[in-house]
Length: 101
Image 1 (cartoon, one colour):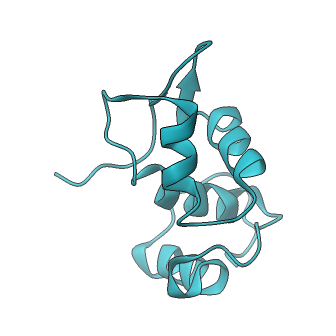
Image 2 (cartoon, helix red, strand yellow):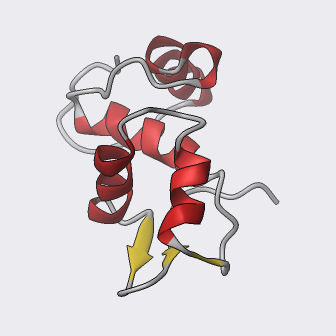
């Protein structure tokens, strides 16, 4: 829901809020944005549910993700593909996104 520009730019808090109100009313994902900047806002919000530096099993990741969406596979894959989480054979961990200080 952010206008197309000539290049990537940081979204304002107002723009982030608009994206989250549109795609996550009441905290659950109703649709995944087609536009990548909007999708990154949504994924960043989901990634914030994971503590940096903590390793999670697949079942633990699913338990967190089910609070946001029933489509756990797409959400988990998107978090990894967009660099918010990494994985090895048995664990996932948060490696990107914003953090509250």
